[in-house]
Length: 254
Image 1 (cartoon, helix red, strand yellow):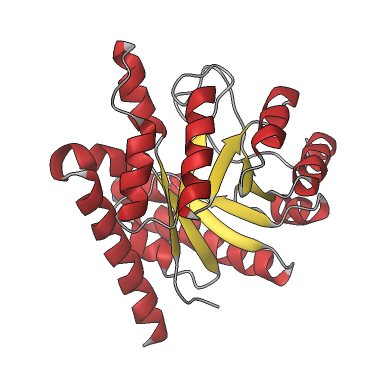
Image 2 (cartoon, rainbow, N blue to C red):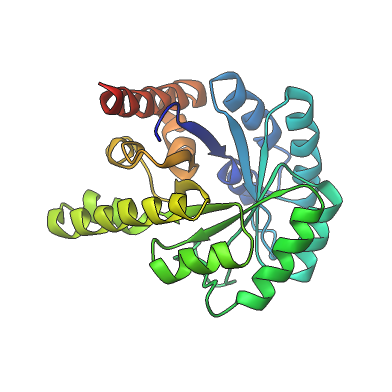
């Protein structure tokens, strides 16, 4: 596979900054518009049960923006009746099912599709019938990938957080072992007919190794880009990430 690698920009943490002061700014909608103008291929937003960052109103605005711009909205959501109902109401281009615990700082690890197969299958059927592509955020574990295929998901998003953490910590052997597992997982998923995405923890130092996995069609990156935007601006941060992704793909084709 390989080819052009898509970039989805997660704008959750623009809302985190807004909500810290209870103000109306900075606006996630403006960040999404700037991200698309800077070369992002889509927008990702996670509406959590506790509404700690993205709000219901944000989802309405982002849905309208993406429809107007002809770009996909990737709606990250827990496998709950409330979130399924919201997703069905907005019918986003993509619905990515993720694990969620109130006490976590951010999403910790992948969704356990093996243990939650019935609930995940039910949500997947409902969302697919409404026209959304269903993605499951999982570890690159053979059993989880097989379960994702079994429940009818069209896409898996492989969790890259452990790889990125190990690489940043200089744990070379551990990082290489996790990267090898990601490569095997991506190959397995494609063999099953699934599209492969990846995300979590990716920064400038780690993106090229992930982008060089030829089966991966899309990266979803948020926290790092929003943080980097404080220093260089959102558009330059996205453009540099885009350039690193493209360079990794060009090396594959060479």
